[in-house]
Length: 339
Image 1 (tube, rainbow, N blue to C red):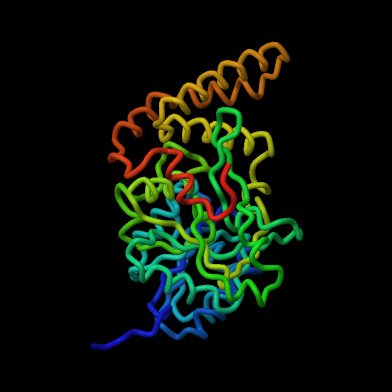
Image 2: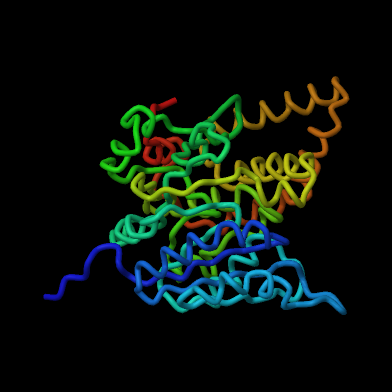
């Protein structure tokens, strides 16, 4: 029997981009260097989501990245005909990909040497749906996206940092010896998936357009199906939090998208009567409080979610039966302390 060296399968790196030439020029050289070091036939696909407009120079991004792209083993830029958003751009890149493994990478993420190999090795286990690196914040803050747990706070789902990485290791050397750990989701801007599982029914749900919580939903569907999402601490990337969206979208719109989609996630996935009752009671209390305080933004978040309420319920009905209830899956996916 021939044994393949772990972590050496070829990978398609897909980078969805919206007016991110500066970020890409800064961060892609590290990606190219890693693909060149691996020499496994990896490819790099940048999806330009500016949207084609009459008179626009469609080669602008490719021109801006010419020096970087020409040094890559196999790199190209594909241009969406119109601005589609994060999930459709990922889908475009996945459809363009030649390899069975796809690493999703945001332009504002800087990879460190050796980041792919531990992730590829993790996906050799068929029960692992996706593998994510340890995410280091560029601002020096906590690894808020490194090992996420899905918490339940006052009737609403919430993402928190599991404390396992900080508890089990206090230095990069100790991190390097840490085994892969379960996580509630894999960051859509830094995670490795099987190409076939990011297509069709496995793709990011357009319910969560334009951005945020779509990666949580995709990962949670894996947990519901009895699969696992893991974080590999030996794989490390650095994230400039909201470096791309924050530069293009006002903060209040970003917050609106986050809060809207948090509600839609609850309506799609919370399936235990006790939790549903808690959620509806908390939602009612939040609406009354917002109305009393004339908090129009909070009311707007609810209205935006309600506009898609029927879609969320249809998505809920279309889900296969979960292998366990909502709370049990939260416990399985939590590498840190329990609630």
